[in-house]
Length: 81
Length: 305
View 1: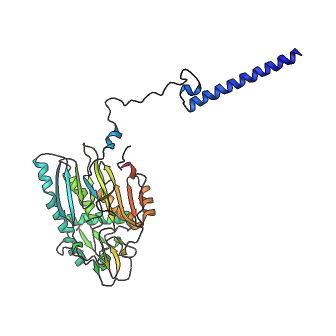
View 2 (view 1 turned 90 degrees about the vertical axis):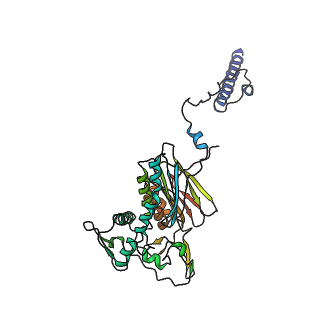
View 3 (view 1 turned 180 degrees about the vertical axis):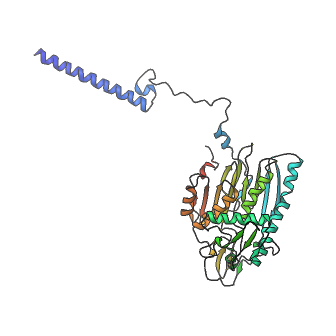
């Protein structure tokens, strides 16, 4: 009778490990695709490092900055008058 | 930046020259007289112009260089547009009521309109290069208004080129050359609103021109008329295009393409623009819809949030 009991215990343990692994895996996947604060995952340390900030290369003009200032038109195209 | 403003060829003209010094200033100061000389040869309103004399007599020999080249430019524009933008519309334009300068025009004439009929083909103009002779068959007279302003604006920029980058604006047909200061900012007028601006474009070189039936309009026999004649009917065009603005490698090419758009309508005209990578266009339709070719956006200034 011990045999089936032990087998049932082992099966319950296996199911528990699979559930735990699935839960952790799901949490990890969630953390990867939808970053959340570590507290939300019940973790003390962040799993993912924050994304690096892109810094402009020093000495190069920023074309977006140049175009952001609306220039005053020097001429107007229109039907002849 | 040197600049000058003057009236010529029935419109307001402005020129900018990115240069300094007395010689550059002198070149700019000579522009009004240079344009006036061309206007005196090419005007259809001046009975003493070389063009008017050719139209009146139907023939001319030893034709003046400027008139010869202006006619050549106009006939090449006709060939490149399958006869759509043709100089052979003068009699049809006069029949529609535009028989004097626009300032002198009776804007609500009661005279009846003639029946519609196609204008003579541009290929009917006979030229002989050796003697610089031109022959016009009976009923054919030339109006160079479809190409002359763009051509003259391009020529003026070339004339100023030895002194520096330049922009020449001839009543809205604009030619420009590359400047180290960066692109020239040019507004596209929205004729539906007072002092309205449709877009602001940034151009490095080439030309931009607008053609439309928003300004040179009048009524004859109770019907609206305008100056862009459809050669197939000899009457003002009736497509869905209200105004067409074209960016092109030159002011002449831009002016020709803008008139083509006005005559072909938005669908066919913009399809032609799309198939020619050196052109971009912005169209306002009769119902107020604004259509831009795919390449127009690369020239348009856009606000960055």
